[in-house]
Length: 286
Image 1 (cartoon, rainbow, N blue to C red):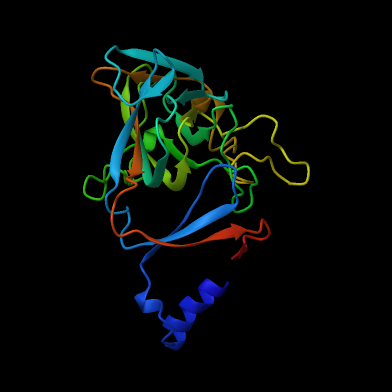
Image 2: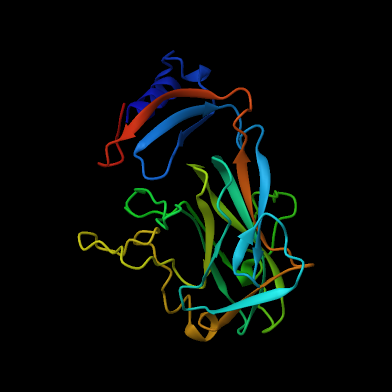
C-alpha cells in the first residue's frame, strides 16, 4: 500500500517524492523454502546480461537436458490425465533464473485440437517441491503457461524468442496424427536455486493438479491457478480435448524450455535489504 501511495502521490498529486528517480524494474528474489525475499532494482526487462539457456526435452529418457537429444522419440499421454513431468539433472552450482520464459513443443493429437497446460517446477535433492504463497493459492508453483493448439498462429513482428505473441484471430484445427510446432509463452519467474536442485516441466491436457495439497479451508483446490479452472464442458468438449497428445523430440524437432539464467558476476545490480513476507493479505514486513 505504501508503494502504491507513493506512486499515485507522484503522478496524480505531483509530489516530488523521488519516484521519478527509481529504477523501472523491481523484483523480489526468492529462495526455496524461505519467506525472506531480497528486493532488487533493475533498469531493464528482461534483465541486462541475461543468458538465454535451453533445457531440451528428451522423450526417450523422459527428462530435460542441457544438450539436444540426437535420436527422434515421442511420449504420449492421455489429455485428461496428469500429463508427463520432465526433470533436469541436478544443478552443478547455485543458479538464478529471473525473467520471461518460452516453451517450444512439437505436438500431434488423436483429435482435431489439443490444450497444453505447462507448469514449471523445481525440486530439492530430497524430492520436495519448491512452492510459494501466491495471490490466493498457498501452493503456487514457479510458473505456468497455456496454449490451445488451434490458436498457435504467431504475430511474426511482435513475437520474440522469449515471448511468443499469439494473435488469436484464426482458428487452425489439427489433422489427427500430424506433428505441429507450437510456441508457448510461460509467465516470468524469479528464483535462486542451490546446487543439487532440479528444474522440472509438467505438460498436461488439463489443469495442473498436485496430489495431497487440497486445503479444506479453501473453497477451491490448491493447484496453482486458484479458482480459475479450465473445465467448462462447452469450451472443452471431451470429443476434442480428451484424446491422446503426443510430444515429439529429437533431431529436427528440438523441443526446449528457454530459461533466463542470470550470471552472478554481472555489473549494475542494485540490491536492498531483505524483506520478510508476513503471510497475511500479501503484506510484507521489513
